[in-house]
Length: 186
Image (cartoon, rainbow, N blue to C red; front, side, top):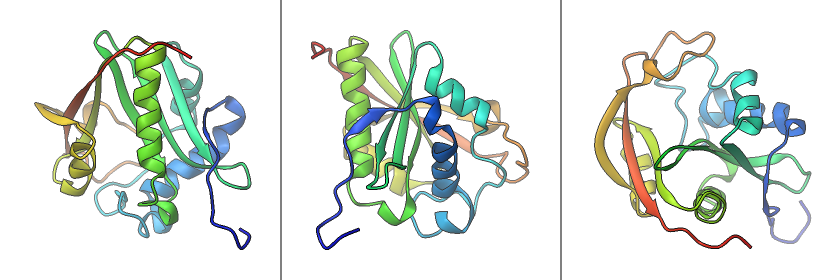
């Protein structure tokens, strides 16, 4: 970075050309030593790979899916989030911000961009997401943005089975939701 303040690039849709760098970003945000410098680390609760390359490729190119990212000055992703279209709206996930840049507004921008995508591209509806039970800081992040707990829970093991995963199979996910009104596409 130069002497001026760092300004991330605009949010854009990810492509398969971003696959390797997105994979590294997601692993860095949730697993291993770099994750421990941020507030989203799951390293103390889970092990194994966070997301396979095949899962990530499907998130980027699959029908009814979109992956958005914010790039840094070098063009590499510093944050990402994905949407999967549902009957009621969309499910938000694959959310990661480079640990050293967390708490700098990138995550808020990505969440807002996903809400905008749901509103303008998919006609609005209910945005749902899940957080690991017992992570009050994550739940509070979403509550400050209008998400509320639905009361629904599911076992993490029912939706996640990554290579090398041995610790955290008993964790529970809590669902949160927010209505997102339709807006005209630009």
